[in-house]
Image 1 (tube, rainbow, N blue to C red):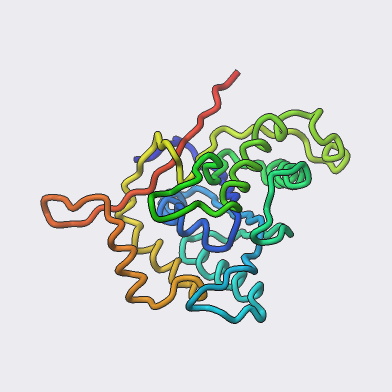
Image 2: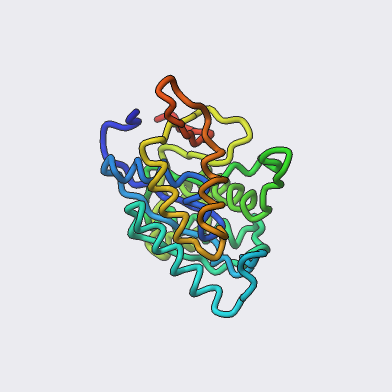
Length: 238
C-alpha cells in the first residue's frame, strides 16, 4: 500500500538509538524502498543502555552511535542527528520543544514519526520507557502549533528558520492504532538492522526467536505475517 503520490521527506524523532528500528524499522525500510527520504533525529545517545548482556558503560556513547549508524544504513537511512539530552532524564520542557521546533524548521519534513505519549503500558509485561513517552509529547507539542507559528520561539526567525507546517504525524507504539501495515516483505531488513545494535539485543538466535514470536498471523500457505501499527494524524489543508 502506497500512501502518497509523490516522494516525501520523513523525519523520525525518537528518544534512543535502536528506537527507530524496534518501533518501525520495517516501515522505514518500506518507505526508503518506495523512494522517500528518511532521516533520524534522536534526543539522546543511549548512554544508560546497560543490561544483563552488556554491562560495560565505557565508551558506550560512541558504541551506540556507531551501532545506530550501521543499523540505519541497512534500512537505507543516511542522515542521523543526535541532540544532547541525557538518556533516562528526558522531559517535555520548553528547552526540548525549542530544540525540536528548530530541527523541524531546518529539515522541513512532510511527515514526522515519533512515539505515542499516551501509551504507558505496551502490554501486561512491559512499561513504556519514560523517555519514549516524553519524546512523543515533545514532538506533538512541537509540530502543533509551534513549528508552524511564527510567534512561537521568535529567536528561530532570527536564525533564519521560518515556520513550517507538517502534513502528517505517525505515532509508533500507539495506544489506539488507526493504521496497521503488513510489513512482512521488509521484516528481514528490520531484523538485520536490529542485529547491528549488538549491545542491546543479546544472543542473536534467542533474539531471532523472540522477534519471530511477534508474527501477527500465519496465512494459508503457512507464511508468517508481521505488522507495525501507528496512530496516523493527517492535518487538513486550509
